[in-house]
Length: 326
Image (cartoon, rainbow, N blue to C red; front, side, top):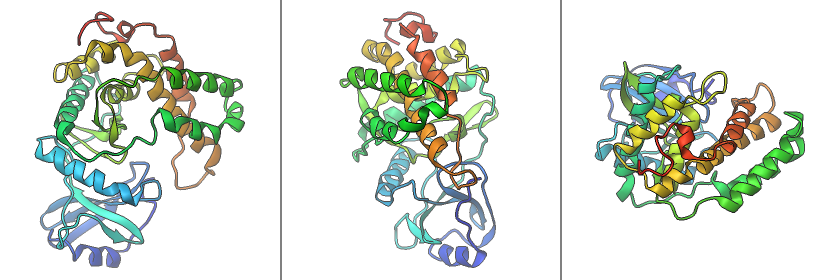
């Protein structure tokens, strides 16, 4: 359920008077999504997505997200484009929430990604990184290595209720990553949440990227590590090396990785797994059942974290050689 704040037709009509999109024909809530309330609008000029930003999205971050989508769109990246209001602004207020309308992207997300879907995602991610190379605004990644310990400390006392020994295991992994996290790799704007439900396809052709509300400035190869976690594990928790190879080779065909970036993939992937485990663990332990936050099982990412800990070379992700320039 992703309609946390409902709206009436009267409220929506008043809100839309500040836009030049024509008469409202219909609207409905969109069930998919986690962070915000989303509605599909059909107006005389076409289809749009209305988003009401809930408490987890900070109002002061919205200009960054809007400017990034505008920038990427100008650079030829297929992503939603914020629609301007009559006064030129892109953010309004609806039902007591900051709200925006963006253009609608055709397509659907893949519940069962194939090898070719993974390759296409790698290609699109690299293209986004290159397109963002001259994007000037910066936003700190609050969920990078220096943000993990404060999050962990709020969950640590109850972690062993999820699995015995999880507290000690997580503490050791966090300490390792804090000591060894790379600091000299290329940085830029990253999506930071490019899971399958944030990538649309028309058939086997990638049609666009959505949901930039975790986007920030961080290590570019870390974004690739997030995708390895999100796209290349199967239902039985095994890592699919063929998908991993396709994703990384798709990326490298557009933006070749340096030897240092390739060598750092195991530790970056460990960090990405820990990041998603920690946010899931916090929600699992602190959010009441039946609340508006969708809880997800943290053990899925505990298993991925353990897999990455076993990796001794980037070749084990399916790369042809551990030290080749990809």
